[in-house]
Amino acid sequence: MISKQLKLVAVVITVALSFQLKAQESKSIEGRWNLTISQDGKEVPSWLEVTHSGFSTLVGRFVYAFGSARPIAEVKSDNGKFSFAIPPQWEPGKRDMEFEGSLEGDRLMGKMIYTNGKTYDWVGTRAPKLHYNRQPVWGAPKALFNGKNMDGWHATGENQWQVIDGVLTSEESGANLVSDEKFDDFKLHIEFRYPEGSNSGIYLRGRYEVQIADNHGLEPSSIYFGGVYGFLTPNEMAANPAGEWQTYDITLIGRRVTITANGKEIITDQNIPGMTGGALDNNEAEAGPFMIQGDHGPVAFRNIVVTPIMK
Image 1 (tube, rainbow, N blue to C red):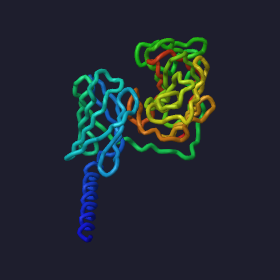
Image 2: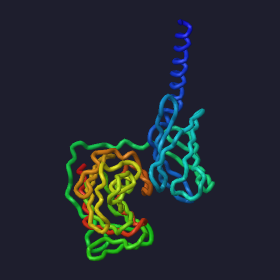
Image 3: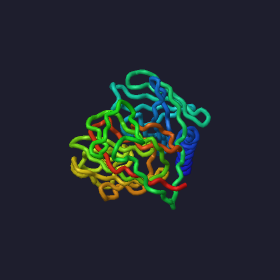
Image 4: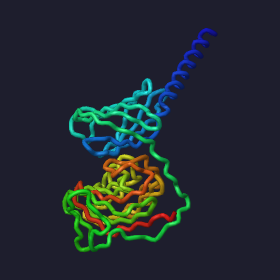
């Protein structure tokens, strides 16, 4: 009996030590990282999260330059290096995206093999903690759209946006629209309308997309109307039928967001983990602009009013 007990204790100690060593080895890469991929002459913002699952397995989530957060089944870690692979989502080709890297000082550095077989360098920095002001003092509301022209906004490409009868309108897919002014913490009121089957979004600080899409009557999802794309799912589907004017009232303080859609609070004081696909950058400690998505379908906006927090 004693022999069996000693063997059991030995097994437990061995497992515990193995777990401890694995934790010591991997602890430094655990957490959330803002990645920048040097790809075809561009600096592509991406995001990585690494966490423990059980005794020693590392798992994660990854956000590329477009698409939603996707799970990583296992992050393999050995001798200071780590690797993982994820299947394509909206990328061209059928091969997995493959990543390998290591911790160099306070940064992650590595290489990515894209779905087309090309290899690119990337670097990662730890995502910053964003301060949450529990007692905000709000400034004066400010209209970001004057109803007359596009002053205060610029297109990310060839501009298809125009002002029609006081409405900021994109009649076809084209460029996104970015506010000239940047904001830190704020309250936003915005009204929008889209035709049947269309899709758009409003990016908070240019990094976190709140989805705008024709999803009336569907079950809520993080990639549907009112969701923070790929991360936060509304507690109900609040979309009206296509063709009607609709509203979002959004409060963002630090990472915490509250979203009211058409008068219904659908996300309450939830943390946004990191940038969503399509973000302008992942410099989360900095103020950022609003970006209106115009590359997915026709959409119209009016009454865009922001109330910034007082410092």
